Image (cartoon, rainbow, N blue to C red):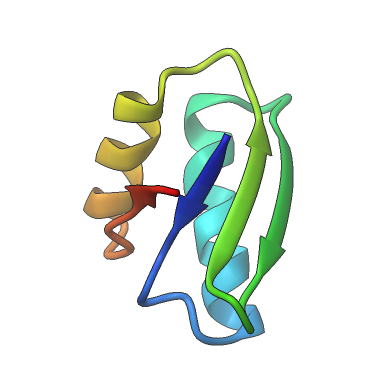
Length: 64
């Protein structure tokens, strides 16, 4: 799954995004790219659940 996160502009943001995703799936494989504001995730969790936790963390995401 790939998500576009407009607010993810730096490495610190990417760490916060990763931490938020891991709060719902500790085993998720996460690849962040602040330059393109994209996150690639391998997880069994639904995109809705990920979007909810990311929005709560201050990083609203859209499925890309």
